[in-house]
Image (cartoon, rainbow, N blue to C red; front, side):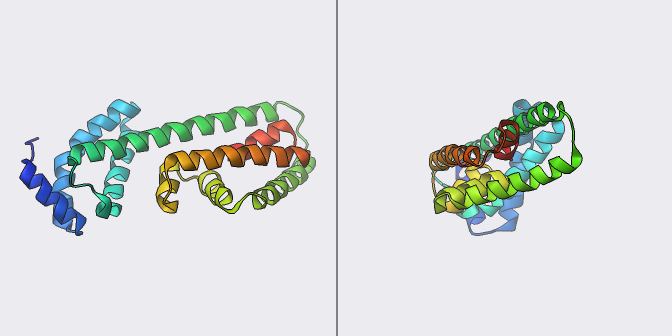
Length: 196
């Protein structure tokens, strides 16, 4: 990979910010191999690395107006790739927790009709509890847990910091646990519902 001269890169960034498709293609061709190697090193899976690189360049195009021309494009791309990998790991941990909780619940006696009724009641209780949250907590919780957006995506959507998203989620989870406990939702079902 032949390095881009600083002047060329600054010109490419300027053109990319203006929506120039040719500049985007040049950036993609220049950085895709390097980003693929970085993604593979982070994720240890060729398929996941390929998905990450695709998402990385989609984000670059979607957020092109936010590109900081004071930084090198390589460091900007690496930061986005690292955030995407972090989001993948966080989502993976959450999915494992849900699977473990489901396994624990399924070890007991299975009563399909009662379970169906309980699930419906539990979902209604969760919905009522979510509606009692303050507006911003409710928005953050809904985007993160129900729409499964990453903290980074929610921060950008709501124009707040990732730390603020984390604070809202912590408070929302605490409030929902209290509200659902008051509604007498059992602990295993509460874990499953809160992990969604």
